Image (cartoon, rainbow, N blue to C red; front, side, top):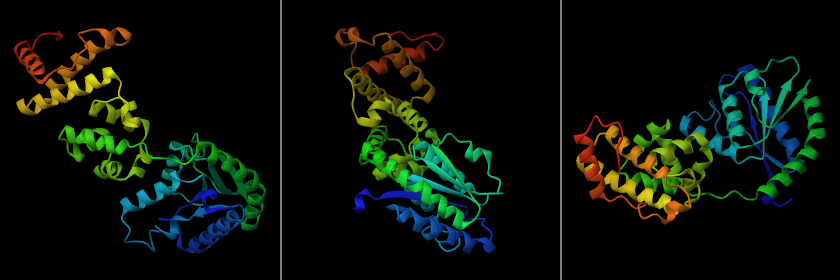
Length: 310
C-alpha cells in the first residue's frame, strides 16, 4: 500500500507512574501491537519512543503536549492500553473525542478501568484479553474489517487542510493592539496556545467550539468569519464600526465597561435590522469615529440613562 494511504494509529498508555517492574513488559506488548497493526497497513505511533518521561527528560511539558496531541489529532484510530492509572491517557482520550477519532480500549481481564474513561462518548470499542497471545489473536480478528472501514472514512473525509483561523486571529488582535497574554486570558488558555495557533497552521486542530465562541466574541467577529473569512455586508459594517470604536477607546482611555456598554447598545440596535430590509435601509451604516465620540460624550453626561439611543 502506498505511503499516502497508510492508516495511522496512536497507542496511549501510562508512562509517568508506570512501575519500573512493569515498564519493559508493557513496552514489549506495545511493540507487538505495533507489529501486528503493521500487517494490516496501520502505522502505530508509540509515545515512549519520542516523549518518554524517563528517557526524554529534556523535552518540556509544552512540547510533549504539542507533539502528542498532534499525533492523536492526525491519527485514524487511537488504542488505549488500560494497564495503570494515567492522567495522560485521559487527556489523549478527550482529545480523540474532540476530534472525532475512534478509540479502542485494550483491557486485560481482571483489571479495573475508570468509568470516567470508558464512559466518555467516544466512538469506541473495548477488547478484553487474557495475555499477549490472546490480545494479538483478537487483533487478528478485529483489524481487517476495521482497517477497511477506516480507509473508507479517510477517503470520504479527504486530506485535512488549514482553515487559516490563526491568521485571522493574529490580524484582528493586531488591529486591536492586543497582547497575546490578554487574549489568552479571555479565552482561558495559556499564551503559547494563542501563539501556536497564530504561527502554526496545525495549531487550529486544538481549537474547540468553546474556544471559537470566546475568540469570536472578544474579537468582535462571527465564528463564520474566523473559520472561513467570509463576511456578509452587515457583518462588514459591524466590523468597521467596531474598529472605529476601538480607535476612540484607545484615544480617550475609555474604560472597558463603557466600551462594552457602547458596543452592546449598537449591537442591540443592529439586531432589529437583520434581514433583507437591513440591506436596503439607509440607517444601516458604518459608525464613524466622530459619531462614536459623540455617543461616548452623551453617555458620560447621562450615566443614569437606562438605555442608549442611536
